[in-house]
Length: 142
Length: 223
View: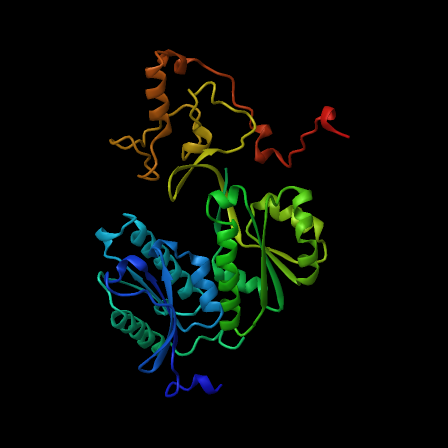
C-alpha cells in the first residue's frame, strides 16, 4: 500500500477543540488545514465534554490517523467538570483502542487556556508525531 | 435492573472470524442503564469491532441497531431486514434478549457481546451493586428489607459470620458492607432486634435457579 510508506506517510489528524479554550481575540475556525508533514481537520465544540466515545471510534473507523482533543485546564472548565469527563472518556477510548490493536496513542488530550490557532496546530502536530510512530490507520480506504 | 459487562473484544473477534457481515444490536432498557448495551455502547462497539477484525486480517462489514427492548418479540421485528442481510449477530442485550433474537432468527449465528452479571442498583454514577439474586423465595420481610442472598458473599441466612471486618465490611471484599451488620442495624433502628432471634423454617431453595428452568403460567392473561 502506497500510504504505508512511513517516509511518505502524512498523518490525517482530527482535532476537536473546546470553544472556551481559545483566547478571546481568536476567531473560532473549522475545516481542514495543512501542517508540517500532516493535515488536520479542526472541529469546534462548545465544551470538550461533548465528545463521546462513538464519535471518536467512528472518526477512527473512517480513517483518521489520530484524534486530538483540546480541552480547558481542569479547574477552568466553564461547565466545571466537562473537561474531566472528556478525559475519562478519552482514557476509556485509549484502553479500547489498545485492545483492538489500533494503539492508544492515536487518541490524546491536551489542556490549555487562551489558545491560538498556532497552539492548536502544534497540538495536532504532536498527535501526528504519535500517529506517525504507529503507522497509517489500517481502516484507511476500507 | 439487569446488569451486564462487555466481553473482552478479543473473545468477540474469535467468534466473528469467518463472518463477513455483522450486525451489532443493543437494547435501550436495562443494559443501556448500566452502560453496557445501549445505543451509545452499540455505536462504540460497532466501529471497534470493524477495526479489530481489520487488524485481525478478517475484515467485516459492521452494521448496528439498538432496539427499544430486545426481550419483546414486537420490538425484535424491527431488525428483521438487517438480520436477513447479516451472517452474524452480536448482541449487547442481557441473556434474555439475546435468546429471543436467537429464537427469532434461527439461521443466523448469534454471539454475546456481554456477560449478564446481576440484578443490581446503580448506587452512584459508574457503580452498580447487587440487590437481588432472583432466588424465588423472597426473605426481605424477615431481614428488614435487605437481601442476604444477593448481598452476603456466603448467602448466609443466619449471619453475620465471623469474617466481618472491624469497619463493618465483608471479609471477601473490603468495598462491600457486611449485609448482616446492616440488617442488625436496621432491626435495631426499627426496635425489633428480637425478631432476628426467631427460629425459622428452612428457606425454599427449590424455586431458585438451581431448581431448574422456570415456567410461570397465568391463565388469566393468556389469549
